[in-house]
Structure formats: C-alpha cells, structure tokens
Length: 285
Image (tube, rainbow, N blue to C red; front, side, top):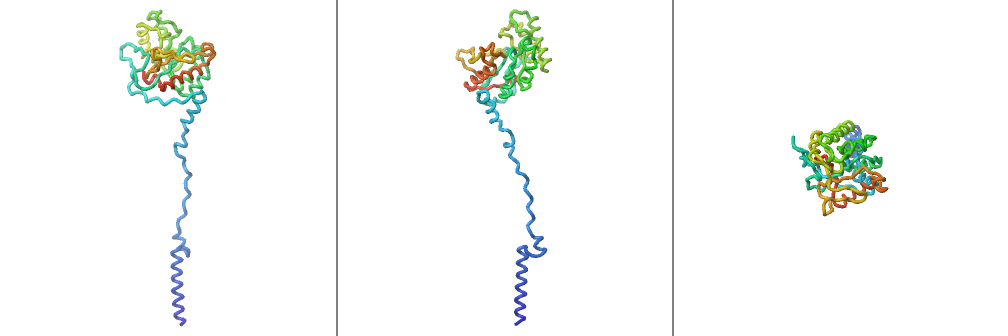
C-alpha cells in the first residue's frame, strides 16, 4: 500500500516540475527562458512637415500686416528667356514680355524716396521688383537700396542725371548710360543688364549707346501706378500677361500725403484683383 502511494507522489512531483518549467517559474531554466527585457523606445521624431515652419501661415500673417492677401506663387521661370539680345544685334526695346503666364512685372524708378518701411514691406512680402536707379537721386544714400538688392530684387540703370535723352547726341547719351553702369557696378557688385530711358524717351542713338555700355534690353512699360489707381496704355484698361508696370520711389510730398508703402499696397491689390501674380523680370530678359 505504501509503495503505491509513493509511486503516485513521485508522479505528481514530476508533473508539477514540468509545469513549473514550462511556465518559466522555476529554477535557472525559468530565468533563461524568460522574455528579454524590452528596449526603451527612442524619442518620437516629429514629421518634417511639423518641424518646418508653416510658410503659408507665415505669409498670411506678413501680408495681413500690410492689409493684403498672399500672392499665388509665380510659375517656374522659362528655360529659355523670351527676350534676348542677339550677338551684335540692336538692343531690344520692350514694354511687355511675350508670355501666356498670368504674371506681371513691377519696376520702380529714380530712387528719391528712401522709406525704411518700404524695405520692411519688401522683406515681409517677398514680391520681386526691379529698381531703375538714377545717380542724382540716390548718390547720397546708395546704401538704402542694398537690403532691397540682397532680397533678390534687380538693380537696373536709369542714367546719371535723368535727362531727356532725345535732346542729347550719342556721345552724351553714352556718358549718361555708361557712367551709371560704372557707378551701379561699384556699389552693388554687378553691372546692370537692363536700362530705362527717363520719361520713356529714346531714339536710335539711345539703342546704340546702351548697346555699347553692355545693356541687354531697354525696358519701357504698359501701365504706370499713380497713388491709388493705374494708368493703362491699352483701351481695355486691363492688365495683360507679361505687362511691365512702372512705379516710382516717391513719398508723401509727391503722393499727396500717401506713403510709398500704401501706394505699393494699392498697386498689389490691383494686380491681385485682376487675377495676376508678380514674377521677376530678370528671369525673362
């Protein structure tokens, strides 16, 4: 009888030991078979989109500061510029750029007004402009335009003294154009490729003189910005793709109390209302 009990106890002990071994609760075998500790997870990395600044939101805030809505991004510049000067050929004279893109180009003349708020406005809005500078208007402060140029805005030639070039011979015209080419190159490190004759007055002597000074195009305009409205050359009084717009560095004395930043905001609204955006002139010429 005792022998049978002992046999049952031994069987029970063996089964118990096996169960403990399987469950990992017994002896060194249990420790070896235990699940390896989980490695601490690395810090969660925010998506690149979340890290990058929300440019659209930033643009909206910047434009709202000036009472405007952001412009649509301009199309990519054309691979081949639609306006080029042929080697040895005459300097092209343009008032608009041949393109079907709904873009226009802003040009600003002279340089008499040097409003610090305008520099801030251009830094905020990042709207490209081309500045046609006259030495007699800017010689006291060429430095004012350097931050504007550093933003990527173009620097172009508008003569030394702003004369009516039609009243001058070729040699005198060349002095006016080449002389300002030299000054602008000294101040900004690059010789301008674009030239605008004062008042839009030019003749064949102007083309010849400009060509000899390294000019690639004589730039006129299709619309001119006044204080609140634009003057149009065409009868439909509308912007067209590729139009070049003329404005001036002017302040309250010339704008009947309006600041240059307000005049610029008015101009930008006219452009937006007609469904256009602004592109960089130097990308097309």
